[in-house]
Length: 307
Image (cartoon, rainbow, N blue to C red; front, side, top):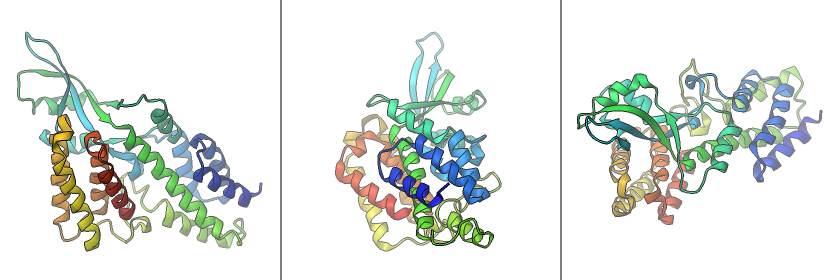
């Protein structure tokens, strides 16, 4: 097998509009050729899905909203009732419900977005064991009989794009060093170093989702000082979002909560890039916000800088 040629083919596929399922077959072949355990494990999980949510990389943890069906005594059922996650009293349940964790294969995620009609969202069922926590924050006499996490297609597309970006970075760096013999034992350390700098760096960390010690996020810590210019860009976007409250309609309260969380993080001495990035992704998922192209462009530019 000509590994160099196959890598070049994948780079072309990633830069083009090739379905991710076809890319994964080539990536699997290269994973076995490189003999790097971490890269091989990552590709296998992305191709077949992750066994459990604790193993997933950070880019598969995406913002979502909580909607429930409530049975009211002697009244009609209340369906698709939105509940702000911050109302959940139990901290562990609140943290669980705040984001959706995508364990499906990367090709399944891409197909979800491709097959979805315009304007539609995706729903992930909430386990019944969490319903009591949701019941406690209801302001009326009723019981939750169904609950789901509502996910925007753009958030899932963002997860797929993030995977492609990491894979592209890895192969571009690898391609630049193809003058070495990748099968030689002494060069395996170089391959492992490229893996850590471009893809892994905390993807698997004893079951916890973490991106510490990652050069992808621009430092040895997830909590680093951001530049004054980037801080000003974020604050400018937040001001624009607040001016568009009348267009957000039903999502106004959720948007306000995200803006408040972002401002709180910016006030810290060492803001978390991971939390800032997650907040900006959440803003982008609100249709009333991204309808303003200037704001969408600003968010995209900030996400690029956050890594």
